View 1 (cartoon, rainbow, N blue to C red):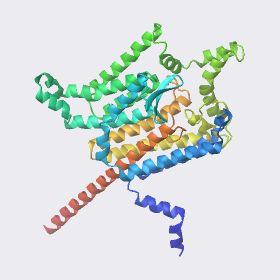
View 2 (cartoon, rainbow, N blue to C red):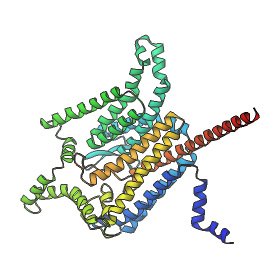
View 3 (cartoon, helix red, strand yellow):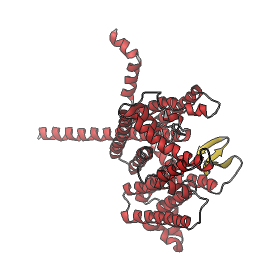
Length: 453
């Protein structure tokens, strides 16, 4: 009777569910813990939204976050149960085309009626589609990683059909059949195009996306010298834009913002704050620049080893968007060093498990996709932390903490990422189990044969 009762408890159902779960259990639990941390943290860090007169209360904010988390769960389990490797690969080839279309609308500031470009903080980063807002750069990260996985896999197999057909049919286009040209057209040119187009709205996001894609190409096994050339071209392009900015050109672009974020000259800004009359334009501008970086550092310092306790943060009333771009500093303020260590361990564990899953995959496409997605999640997580602790030479840019920070678009994208990871990990574990069974069967046959002889 006692045993039967145990099976009907919540813990018993959860245990049975985990036993039947064929995907990577560690990755699933990491996603679950991050989502739980998100619910608690967002609820505790959002009174500023109410104070700024948004017309909503904390319950409404909590309900909104719970809806986003619920959508995230549906996406994760939907992709886990119904996702197929061949579907992912078929859709991946469209990643660059879709990214290019979205970025073109943004860069040209087009209004196509149903789809139009919108601005946020003076930068065009949003597409309004049928009344819904989509943060383009969040989706471009995912789409380009998926596309690059397809391109690297297709290049390795020599299956760029259009290039091969054109090179065979037209003598003047014979160069399209060469490996070097195919790498340029299908891999390097898309990376350069997307990175430069993203830089029109956010230089820091462009550097982050370009860095992830280049690292993914290196992991994919292409020649280092080719990747170095692409990296050099990107650096020269940014260097040329920076030089033009210093010469007085491109003053209306985001380059000035990037320069100020990299230099992090808070001492000069503080001096302006001290020297300017209170509530003057210069005073307000200087204070606005210091609210986030200085407030984040204060939150971390005040948190100390043990933290102030859940709900006792004071910097959440001072730091704008602490529930998004500065979530790590808020968590440290309330939970202290232990909270920081838990987050770091979770993301490092994800990196380790992702590496293991990639090794278990018997398909090159799966390996490269898992590697790229893991780099995206962990890279953004640690960049978010570096921004929060004001690490030198790291731009003070807005990057959410994956599956923790408030932000519908980012949360949905990372839910899709985890869903794809779990779907591929399921196939990888099945492949590994099949290989082990084959090895055991072969060993048994060898042992039987030896015994007979």
